[in-house]
Every structure is written in C-alpha cells, then in structure tokens.
Image (tube, rainbow, N blue to C red; front, side, top):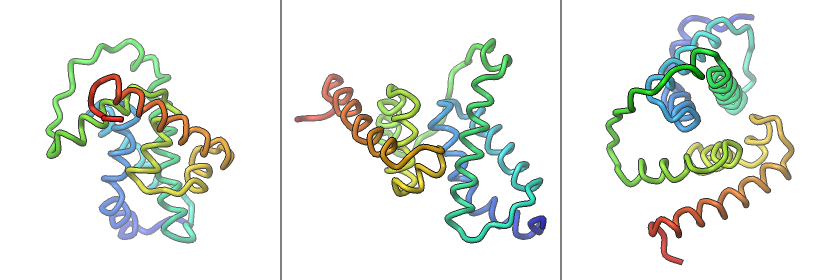
Length: 160
C-alpha cells in the first residue's frame, strides 16, 4: 500500500529538519546533508511501507538517513572529492561549537549521543534504528560521554 501524495508532503514538512540534522551531524557537510535529505524523501515516496505510528515512521526515517550517509561515505565520488569548505550559518555559535567537539568522536559514539541528546530517542529506539542491542547502545552512550568530556576538558571548554 503506497502512502498518498498529501501524506508524503505532510511527512516531509514535518520531518525534513530531523533528516537534515541527522545527515549533517554524520556527514559534517551542509551540501551532502541536503543531498541525503532529498534521497530520503525520494525513498519515502517510493516506499510501500505503511507505518503503524509516528515512532516507527521517525525511526525508519533516521535509519534510512544513516544508511544513505554511509552509502555516500563509501561511494567513489565522495572518496575522491576534496571539500571546498563548509559555510553554514548557525544561529547559536555554542551549538555549533558543541557539534564540532562531537565530530571528534568515533562515528558510533557520535551518532548515539546525537540521537539520544539532540533527537531525544530512547536507548531502545536507538538500538532499533542502529540494529544493535540495548546493552551496546548503553555502552556507547557511557563511553561517548566519557570521551566527549575528556575532549572538552582538554580543550578548556569544560570545567571539572
């Protein structure tokens, strides 16, 4: 059963910011995040899934976004391109500084912390989205927080 055009438009209006933020935190590039956002919207339009509730829809969108980001990272085009720089206007410089610190973490910790704190997913939801066990996600959260604190302490941006 395909989702109707009006429903797709409503979902895109409601979730495009979530998709973009998730892609941007993973890719660290504004334009690539825009491309992934568009790809996810196309995947939604072509999908024959019938979502039971908003949580399942949100988790599906995040999963597809992360998969599209990984696909982009693996592509020959992406590996051979040199970034020209990323000029993105940020309304809150402190939030951008925190994202820069978060980007210093390994992908698994960064993605887990982002989904937990920025998108407010539960540990169980993150486990479902990433296809990992609840215990793994709990460990990644703990280790990621510890590593992030260490990065912030070393950079002088956090007082013990």
